[in-house]
Image 1 (cartoon, rainbow, N blue to C red):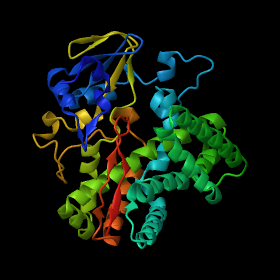
Image 2: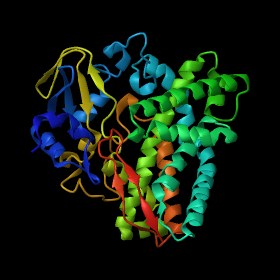
Image 3: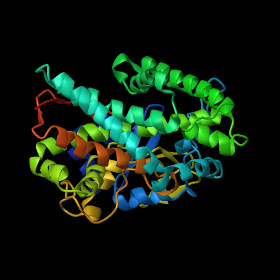
Image 4: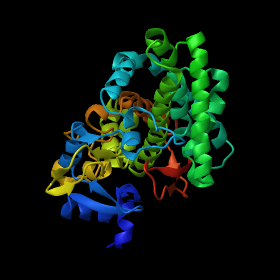
Length: 392
C-alpha cells in the first residue's frame, strides 16, 4: 500500500501499459476518493465507469470553467480551448469546428496522411540501412501527428519544421517547466500571427475555412486559442497512441500479423488500444457548481473532481474480468476521448491516423522488432513512451 501523501499522484502513475494496482484498490473501495493537495484543498478522484460517465456527462452540475472557478488574476493567462469552457460559450465555439471533423470532411485529408506516413517510413528505412536501431518514437510516432495538425490548420510548408519543433518542445518536460511554458507561449504567438495572415488571405486549411465562413464572429486570439486546443489535443495524445500501440503490436506478433494481412482488422484493434491504453489519464477537471453528493460523498461548491479515464476503461464492472486484456471486437464504448459535450472533437482524425499508420508500418517492415531500451514516462497526464528503439 502507498503512503497517504502519495495518493494524489496515483492517477498519473503506470506499471508498463497498466495502471498501478493502487488505482484498482481505490476503485474497489472508494468510488469517490478525497485527496488533499497543496493549499489545503480537497480534490475528489472518481474511478468507476458509471461514475466517470455521470460526471463527464452532467454539465449542469459540473463546470469546466477553470479560469472562472480558480479566479485567474490579471497577469495570468486564461488556458483557453474548448475543454475549459462551459455552455453557452462552449456551444458557440464548438459549432464552428464540428462541420470540419465530420467523416466526410476528414476523408479529404486521408491521402495526405497516407503520404506523410509513407514519407516517415522512407526516412526510417534510410536510417535503418546504416545498421543501427531506429527510435520509432522520434521518427514515427512524434512527427506524424505534428504534420497532420499542420495540414489540418493550414500551416505553410516552409514553416512546418519550426512548428513541429514548437509542438514537440511544449510536451518535453525534461528541460524543466519554464522551457515547456515558453514553448506554449511561442506556439500561441505563432498561431495569433498565422491567424492574422490568414485573415488577409485565407488558405485551404481549417483556419482559412473558419475565417471565410465565420471571420466576423471570431477574433484572432479566440481562433488562435481554438487552434492551440487542437494542437494540444491532437499532438501528444496521438504520438503516445502510435508509440504505445506499436510496442503492444510488436509484443503480440499474432495480432501484428492480422493487422498487416487482414483488411479492416485494424479498426477493432485501434478501438481496443484506445480503451486499454487510455493515454489521457484524467479528463479536464470538473468543478461542482453547487454543493452536491456523489456516491454519498458531499462535495462543496467550487471543489474539483478528477475523472480517471484509465480507471473507468479498465473497470471490470463495465468490461468484464478480462478488462486488463486487449480483445479486438469487444462490445461497448470507451471514454478514451472523454464523454458528453466535451468529448474530443478530433477523435475521428486520431482514429484515422492510427488506422493508416499501423498497417503501413507493419507491411513495410514485417520483421520489425524491439531492440531494447524502451522507456516509459514516469508521471504524466498524457501517458506514453520516451524511446522505442527497433530494428528489422
